[in-house]
Image 1 (tube, rainbow, N blue to C red):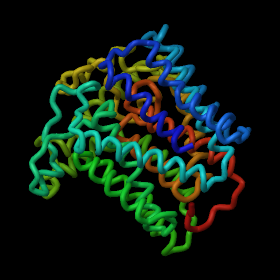
Image 2: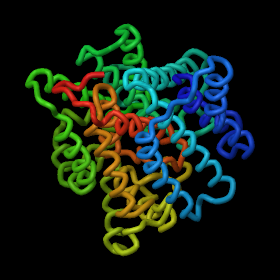
Image 3: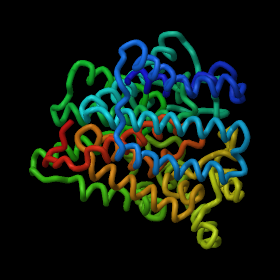
Length: 421
């Protein structure tokens, strides 16, 4: 199963790397289904192991995937071959969720972790070992300086890795690996400490070169909660599940006020790429203000949303396009917040369904599963990490759909005060 997941992470990137931003339909479709074909061949022909799926995990993973399938089908920007590819990708996500939910919790999480860790390390080897760049999937005209490396005395621009669709969301993937690694090290649940340290160092390096300050900061949150739980011997998950969803929902409105406070902290300016970087969170405060104003003006339509890429279909993306001059494809730029993006794509009603699945996933999770699910929700504060509508978030969505299936399959297990793997 680690090979199947790794193939899923790689196969959706390879067409863009090989053919550019408009790869042919047939190679993309073939590579999309490659993970399922390889997994079925290995199980039924080579090792002759019967397929075991979890009805509960498949049901909840299917519900999660169905919400995004409906949003994709409703969008005028996804039709014909693009819709077929999107539905195929959602099928692979559901397959991963169903198969992994049929495993033991420990094995499923171990396979998931190794697939993600290997994906990050492969990108590091391709970039720094073989000198490959991400020119096949460039979304930016200029990357800007890497402030984190500059603060360490190393001059560098932000790095776009070869198999990445963009800068920030690859950092979310690397942050996932770092969050899981730190959690295991702090809670002393790592199956192989040397491998865990290797993945942690690789993910940390990737975040540094992408210059993702949020990924590095948020990756430490699950580990900090593990330490708190071990110290106080309390079960933090139910509280955290509620708080994480609430914070992710409220942050876009709160940050305008909080950003003024951060902007006054001069010691943080060394980590800023421009003078108002901290005050506006790299222009996100402006984006959130514009997108929220539009939703309030069109509240009745917002109940059901506008379909995938709702910010483009409504034209709201052009309200803040002038603040995204470094992006090559401005019309498809997300609103940089998962909850706002979900409202535009599937409306308030659909977003409520996604939040219910996310809450149950976090509240029912244990160990590394808890760390991964919590990190994805927190990372959604500054990035649109939930939704399979572009290459940048397919990795995270595959992980999240798989976690949903695992969590719902094992939800009856009594969680311990310290979530363990």
